[in-house]
Amino acid sequence: MRKKTIGEVLRLARTNQGLTLEELHKKTEIQLDMLEAMEADDFDQLPSPFYTRSFLRKYAWAVELDERIVLDAYDSGSMITYEEVDVDEEELTGRRRSSKKNKTSFLPLFYFIFFALSIVIFVTYYVWNYIQTQPERSSASSYSVVQATSSTSSATPSSTSSDS
Image (cartoon, rainbow, N blue to C red; front, side):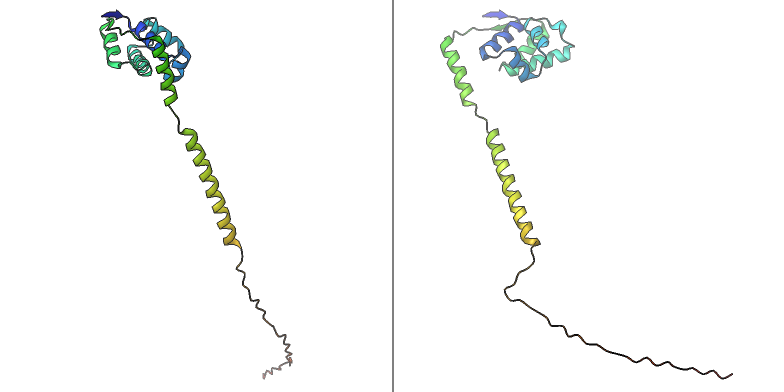
């Protein structure tokens, strides 16, 4: 059984994951100086105990540690006790490579399908709208003949007589 500080355990877990502080910063959105302070066990540099617990939880989650063990060690002010397991370095690096290979993202496929469907919907709407606005074309032409008629009316003045 070995004992290490919280910072040592966090740093060891981060390096075993093959993460740099920059990568961890992007993954957890914790400022670099805060990450460095946690790895140095300098929790006084962190804003408050509430934020410290939150940062420790995020850090432990990012490096796949049990958050409860890390938080219990922080709350009690003690070191973390663990059993060290000998792992061959080649096996560890091979495991890291294979875990990165297995993580495939379907996001590009989703974007491609979304883009293709958008184009199909747009073209369909455009063609449908074009067809709807075209006048109906029939094969037989219809003509109507209009007869011009003229009418003349005679205007006769009407006389009105007034008897007074």
